Length: 135
Image (cartoon, rainbow, N blue to C red; front, side, top):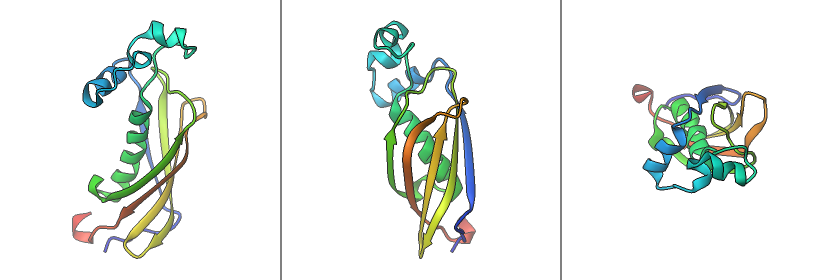
């Protein structure tokens, strides 16, 4: 089995370009106007259109999946959305392994923007280990 150790860290940085909400809307079907139309976002008090929360969550999961080496190995995800993500934000996802229980790897992921503001809270992920030859 692949070895994972408590305290190991992993990281992913993603930039939110102005087209990302449109790309994500096309893939997910989430065409809520606060994600697509800057004026609607401003009228809603968001300062403009914002990224879909599930896109942000997907990036957090991607951070962990890359660490595991297989997106199919992720078995559980839990998070709270805490702050809107604006266009042109740079998000950093930093994870740490909190427990290894047999074939299960447990970790937390911190997601913050370039100002150090947390955009997801209480992100807990779990996944399966993989045989060394597949890593």
